[in-house]
Amino acid sequence: MIYRPRRLRSSGIMRDLTAETFIVPAKLIMPYFVCEGKNIRTPIGAMPEIDNVSVDNLLRDIESDAELGIKSILMFGIPDYKDDIGSGAYADDGIVQKAVREIKKRFPELMIITDICLCEYTSHGHCGVVENGIVLNDPTLELLAKTALSHARAGADMAAPSDMMDGRVGALRDALDSAGFHDMPIMAYSAKYASAFYGPFREAAGSAPQFGSRKAYQMDPRNGREAEREVMLDLDEGADIVMVKPALSYLDIIYRIKEISPVPLCAYNVSGEYSMVKAAGKLGMVDEERVIQEILTSIFRAGADMVISYHTREVLKKKLV
Image (cartoon, rainbow, N blue to C red):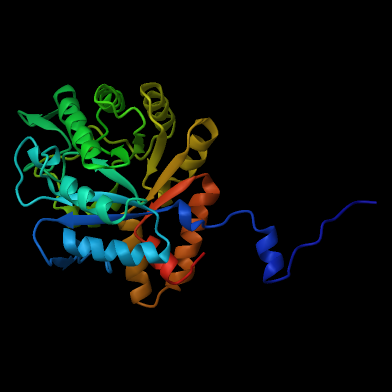
């Protein structure tokens, strides 16, 4: 007799019992943009329902989001002043440093991950030191290490270098260890592609390059094996978590990295992916809530252990899990 398993057509409890993949709230990370000043809330035109906020409003947002169940956040800083070496990124009184101190006072249990990059802070918009129109790798490493160290001293729980300079994980690890922050983990943007999906973020952060592009140091979207090499290099340098960015067009890369990585894998559901869903939902072209569920489920199903997503607040508020 040939065994033919029956299809599970039941709804409700049976479907949940047999489902292979779930969106787990504790594995979602909510990004925030914090700016200088007081009582500031500036909507980001390309990212509906996401704002640039001053520290006082950030604390209010985090309080309500924590009640929803958000446990981990990713911080991006929007400084008032930019220069050619991104000095605001590693200043003790920088906007992220100030925000982290205040968050830790109010919400000591919250996991604060800070973005480590210079692009939001440089007048030219590139992720590193520029000389004669060329982004210099090694001089940038020193500034990235200073940035991570300043965030650690402010109270950040995890450093997330997003610059894609060669050797930056090792530079951060050495700096953190030398200063006594042996237990501070590093989430490396290991496979960060030179993607068209970053447009809304660059509007939010004011970080569009003033010349050239970031293709010289971000990855070619046509390459898959390169992602594996980049991940292994970061692991050799001490990365505790590796990341694939963007997520939706790179589900195959998430799957490939999950197969080879001995450490947890994060995927970044980026601004352009978020904005497309919001635009289509506003026009009534898709069922927005179901699309959000399907997208996040696909990212977890591909192998992500955690997901950074601008949908996080909405997922928890509307219980899309």
